[in-house]
Length: 154
Length: 154
DNA sequence: ACCGCTTAGGATTATATACACGTATCACGA
DNA sequence: TCGTGATACGTGTATATAATCCTAAGCGGT
Image 1 (cartoon, chains in turn orange, yellow, blue, green):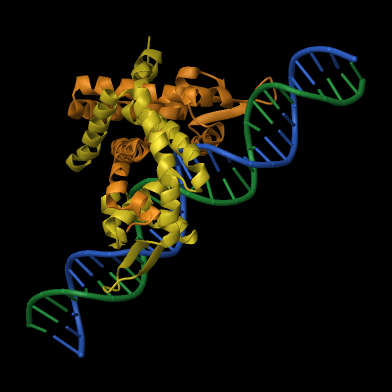
Image 2: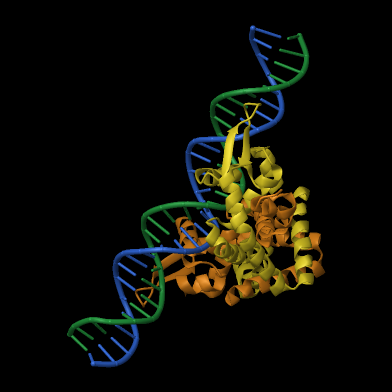
């Protein structure tokens, strides 16, 4: 006769866990991140840094909090990631008029790194879209957006 | 007249980067991980630890390298993640017959944590599936699998 | 028994992520 | 002007991720 433990954690009980949305998302993200990082290597930046540089470049001169909102990223995470970019002088961080704030903007070196990375990113991106097919890619993008939007509900 | 830099990194040139597969995957993963972690909090473990416990439980007694293969995770990443579980005595790590290897297995405490986490995970999982709808969920799972499989091609 | 090749795994270093907490500054009303 | 609450941000701590390099152990041929 089975104990309560056996009932919930035996093989049959655990198999559905392999379909964990989070586990599979994380798995896919690891794979894709490694792929993009590898493709971007010649530019000397990683895909997280690339995405941040794009965000900063598009936003112009923004506060840390605003940039975090734009990137849908925790503010303190952003702070650490900005440190890396600042160390490489790809961005500039300086006090704003409101002295509580720090304004972030891209430097000339940052623009150069971005210009070097852009064609590499395009290649990586098109390979991913090609493997999935345009239609499935579109669907995936929509589903990912839906998931991010779900955050508001909780 | 525009320089080459302007041609590639102006606003129009950067807008497509917002559709970056990696950026959007990472964004979704952050959101979903926070959601699952929050739901699992009463069990005292995070979703990464939950997934690892499930993998170890299903695999029985496995080597680190084998477990890394099963989890599609870098071996050195796995080592660090196992340290956390071992510190909490949720798993046991001991030398194998082949003394180069270390065998990983779940402890009784690990089973208890898993039993406590399982219903919480189910709740989180069903909420995600509910928001997306069963059909879109199925599609998402397939697309994520396809992406992970893509890793072999590179 | 010894030597070279292979395999298993850890250590170092760097980045990414986020919660909890503390500090500095601002805006506004008494 | 003088609090007082709200806002912007950093720090400490912990986990997650992975590339690079190193060591220990097994294995096979001589």
